[in-house]
Length: 385
Image (cartoon, rainbow, N blue to C red; front, side, top):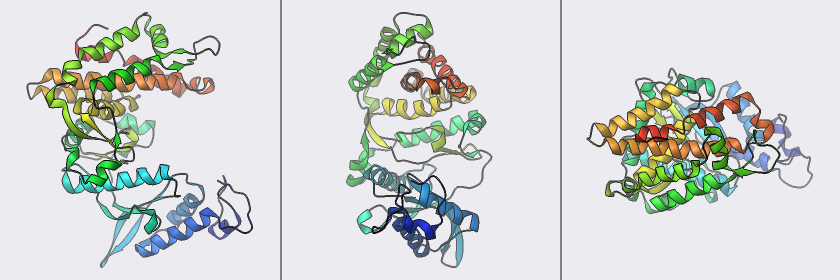
């Protein structure tokens, strides 16, 4: 794709790689026409600044065109969000269809905070896919777009997030239309799957910055050095075994919807303690509620690497939720495995960055914060690390 902005009228002279062509239709020229057709058909109008943004996204966006504009609905104009995949790559089309159809289902069948899908097309055979979605109100925090926004998240936001997770994981995935069920990814659903995946993560090869030479070592060896012990792998697997009976308990068995990518940038922090989950592209299903929570709550927790108060509030809120039901140990299992799952995976990710990337101050802080919180998985469980 071209790196510089190319006006729409010049698109016909370029391929998607920015090279001039002679006798074939440029993919981005077709996209430009399709986008214009959708805008006209759906009655959108945009101010000049937004129109220019659309033109730039048509040329340079790799995944989606995302804009907010005014849409004519009856006798009034209403602010709406327009989302359009930029090409027919199945790696984009399938997640787009999954998120749109799931969002429609959750809006209709749950009491979650959820924007409604006004109109959509998720079948490319019927034309370029798109979705027109309700917009969100202005808020003190709102969309999380960077480290500064993460730092603004509060204990109240943690409470709101845990409430929304409980609503999500309280929905029977079998209540979804069969076609939608088939679109969701199959995620961790049993103790054995969880144990095996975490074993693989601990054994994966990494090349951390403080390792001499370029010969890799296993992640658990790196964590041995970080925590100045020699048996991190054994300690980690024993923690999983400690929670085996609760993972396998009947109350954790079922069919559960999992967001799958609940990083801070995929939540909207509204006012009055309301939190909304966004972008359901990587949603899936699990046959175990505890593991569904470990994935979703854990991803949110580790993603808030620079906000200790928010991370600890998430732990507190999930424990309190079950403590009020007389099930404190169950709540501690949820918090413990959420910390363990996400922070071990994130630690391995950071340790395997390119050495130049690892030397950056921000990445160093992210790694240190992520690793420091690993021991809390034992603390929450009431165990000695």
